[in-house]
Amino acid sequence: MTNQAEALKGIRVLDFTWSVSGSTTARILAAFGAEVIKVEWPKTPDAMRFSMYAKDDEPGLNNGAFFNNLNAGKKSFTVNVKSERGMEIIHELLKKSDVVLENFSAGVFKKWGLDYKTLEEISPGIIYMSISGLGHTGRHKIYGTWGPTAAGLNGMTFISGMPKTHPAGWGYSIMDVIAGYTGAFSVMTALFHKKRTGKGQYIDISQVETGLPLAGANLLDFTVNKRSSKRPGFPPGNRSVTSKDHRENNYRGKVGCPHNSYRCAGGGDNDWCTIAIFSDKEWSTFKHAIGNPEWSMEEKYDTFEGRVSHQDELDRNIEAYTMERNKFEVMELLQNHGISCGAVQMNEDLMENDPQLKVRGLFERLKHPLLGERNLIGLPIKMSETQPYLHKTAPLMGEDNDYVLSEVLGYSKEEIKVLDEQGVLWPNDMPKDEFKVVRPLW
Image (cartoon, rainbow, N blue to C red):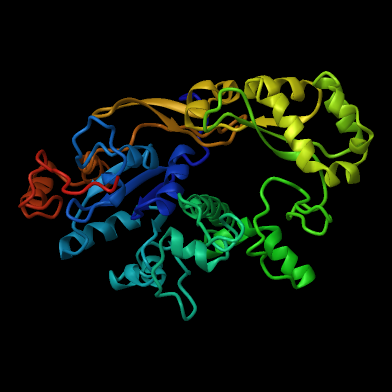
């Protein structure tokens, strides 16, 4: 990958982000070749440094697996931004940067004296991107959010869970990832605008708003039909039509039958496949593919309406067939006949068994100085000229201090030594090689 042209080479990003959303934006920019300098402080580190340790690893500041994945390709610079001298250094760095990123609660950066107006005065033409729960305008801008609260506010929680039970939520905060990607394409658009006009801009992203498109047809249904979200009957599961009288269907509409997930041989949690058939012609092809079993030849299944009216029975018959076969075997057979079918995959399938992901090179193997070789998730993008890739593993905290101070800012070794002795670059009461985590996140 190293001989590939880098779309963002020469762009410097000053990264104040933490957790997932903002770190994802910075990670993407780094994969496209931007120099991303993550600003950190050991006494208030990114919480992701304390998450997902390998089972035999002693928790420490530099060996959190989640942090390694989220911050691949970046540099780490430690400086006490709450000290006068530390903030002076930040101002110097801003003058040499193209982009600044943060995802604190609304108002935090302003309290530091780094609102957009001030940033523009320090570094004319700079691009400033912020991600917060509800954005930096409006009466609720000061509200704090985490994944579950943001999902509740944008309607995603309401449409989760099984019918007639409480909303379940979505587990991992998918909105963190969506907001991160939104931030990345926003910054790239702003860079394109700056190239044409010479003007920077402020990008204000609300994580709650980035999740609204995920509700999809749920919102569209209200826009078009004034129907509220369907609970307790929603979600209906995989079926296109969910009631025998055909009056209830999911937001795909009455588009297919059979249209469901089916248990396969093995009986494990992930031994399932999904099958979706959208026409009578596809149904005929499906019957032929599985050998025209006697039950499939019954006239009641010949039409869409007939299949819907008998779909409980139909699903049982199909599952009797799939339960005798491996999920990948079923997928390959039906796909070879032009029928949409997919194996239901879990972690081990994705990481070890999926030949398509291997061919496409989604997972990149990099060697971390403490964690050793690990597979990291690359960017799900293929580009003929400027393919993004993970340039390096995540940085050890403060490992690039000398580079930032000497090569970017032009400090001498003596000046750097003085800053170190003054506690500007690392707390004087905190040994660099003895940091231990009291309570890892997970």
